[in-house]
Length: 440
Image 1 (cartoon, rainbow, N blue to C red):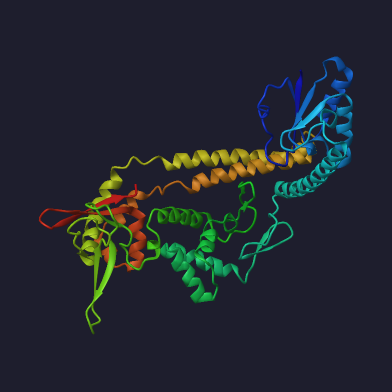
Image 2 (image 1 turned 120 degrees about the horizontal axis):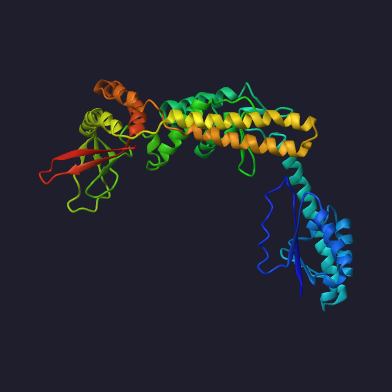
């Protein structure tokens, strides 16, 4: 018994499968990419050497046998007339002469299957159309993101809505609070969006001048950005930083919110406000409401922890930065930019190869698309490099007056730039001290 298999894949659609997908030993695999030459070769081989022709032909789906139902039916008849049993692995089909079913029922099943094939072909043609637009670096189908409108071949900035998006980004960069930026947008412009929508805006490549397609590939420099590269890198860093914090503390009014834990019970300390009857004076405390200790860990005045945090960060931050073995970011960035330059040289050579008939238009478009996707990945690596002037920054913020002159919102922003966690270390004598855990 001889078994062969046939695989067809479209170069515009997801990558071709491997030959080891059948789950059993196959004598030979015929594989096509874009055309059906190997399928024609299979039919020719079977007609030429009928003594060595296969008993079974495995295909994934019938639509791989041709571009439309008529061609598929003709090739089915050719193969089955040679006595070859066709089995589909992803559809319920096997050759009629190998079945013992009722002929009427078999005819009905085949008719339904051909209708399914026709539907799949229509969907494939739609996907091919989207893929061709993708290779031409055209925007994906659908409505343009807020702040843009669709042009003939690219997104165009909408002058009436783009300032709203820009102001939203600037507010987030200023205070590092997503919910705060969302509230600001509603109060200032009357534009209501959910925090999830705001988070999508912050991470959407479109606002950075790039396109993101359904296959998650990103192509950069496709239209005018609302965010520049430095702002985009800062937003990504703020989003990563906020993801480490307890829920809602990124927009909390107090700078220590979500940062302080009790070393004894390992639970987050909550900020509690206490007032006196008929008096405007407020007292802030840090306490753990769910403390499992008995008796529970005592509350501590917020101002005392804040003052000691400022003292310790001024003393310990420069020392911690000096002990870091920082990579040579300049050398890494230069290497990445050299790779980008090499790929840009290849892209500039593609039109020349097209005019010389070395490459056809489809191959040029495909190569250009892949190279631009690789360039976008390299640019993303550059954007994620840590700041090279960390030591200078540490020295600048090591003055107590710097922290005391900030508002609580501004202090919250800078605390989270450097501090991962603040631990309260309690002593037997009811005294306490702080331990700062820096992000780096």
